[in-house]
Length: 88
Image 1 (tube, helix red, strand yellow):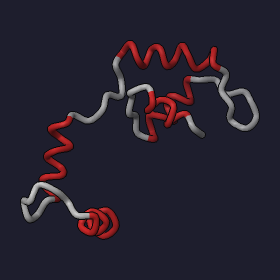
Image 2 (cartoon, helix red, strand yellow):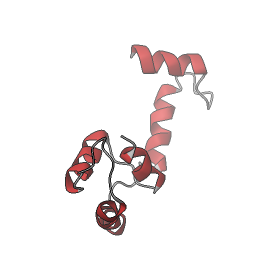
Image 3 (spheres, one colour):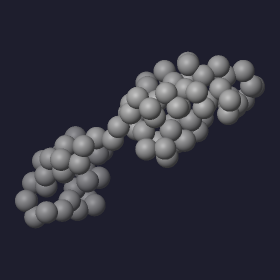
């Protein structure tokens, strides 16, 4: 269940489909979804060496927030963020 959090804590940012793809490469044999470290390490080493799942570039995130900053005041209010995330 926590594999996505573990991978993200290592500086990789896969979406949920990519997390499921990683899980398919790791042979999960334990009941309860536990993964043995020796099965996880080779897959994660390959991911890290290939520099897969890099974070979204800062300029892309900034552009997204600028699009939400309708008043061009340099910030988004909590209310506006909630509105955008729940209504739009």
